[in-house]
Length: 371
DNA sequence: AAGGTGCTCAACCGCTGCGTC
DNA sequence: AGACGCAGCGGTTGAGCACCT
Image 1 (cartoon, rainbow, N blue to C red):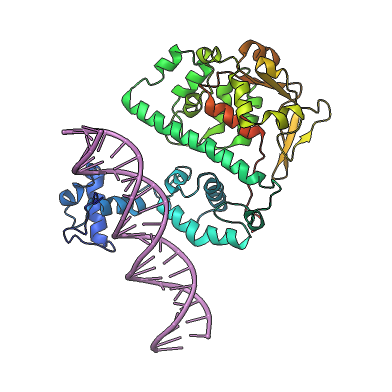
Image 2: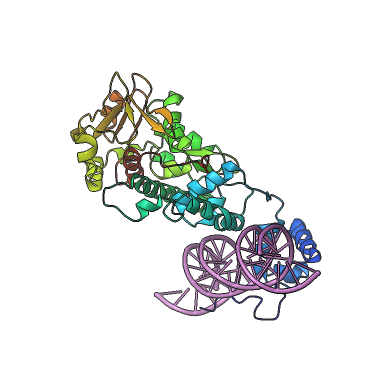
């Protein structure tokens, strides 16, 4: 390889930074920005390599860094995200404003990993140790769920990255999507600049139903990729993934969505048995079924269900409403009083897979309250 | 007080991905 | 297409500190 010539090459200084060096670096960046890190040390009068300067700045000197003890909420966020993302510290750091990936990595290695181990939870798989030993009873719903969610989050991160690239290339990156039939709502959301997201599946579901918006799966995406602060369009990843209603794609692949289920081998358990996709779900008393309304028409309608997460009961659907999934948009719309999602499978591969994953799993988040 | 041990975290190292030529 | 330069990432190290014996 030998592709990263650095301070080791020419006797540049290593080790701890002196206050004078910090001051030089800060002054230079405040005045000029960092520009090329490689060129910076010479310009700033530092006997360091660019890499060292970048690290010192990003991990220590940057003014927007929050130092000090991690809050309980931050700890929980790290654990949940680690379950989703593994050791992708920079991805995790994007969900924790003002914390650096290095800091989070250190905190994980020195505190959280040990704590989970003490609790009998494998810090790698996030499963109880006994599960990790591998009994064959299909017990690892949580692991499967986390894996599904990880796929979702990965897709989201990919979409975000794609967006950032597109955004850099064009001042109007969504124009072509609009022409292809992106819904007006999705479009308006994609145009509204908003903060990076945290994954919140439960709130996403509830947000969709409480929005009162009909036939607008962009709302789902918007809520799912919940915003906090900074600057990325809230619904962009969702629309990139195909959550926006796209009429062209609706017309494609008559059996796409059915095939998707078949591919996932989910149809038998989920639809035929009329079983709950959420292990802890309680059926509501009035319409206590998941209704699979004509898979043959490439639609499924789900009505009236609640499920438990962390001891709280969540209503998946409001009363007298139902959820339709399907690419037969007319039928879906007719059946749907709360929301629906349209789009062909080929375009919406991630979307359908993730919906299926969602339906097939419960929330596996756990809290630190018992630690 | 001195030596040993464990912990923390800033910094380093090696590698990868991406853009450019 | 491949070589190269660069920035960024994740794993690892080691100096400094606190605590224990």
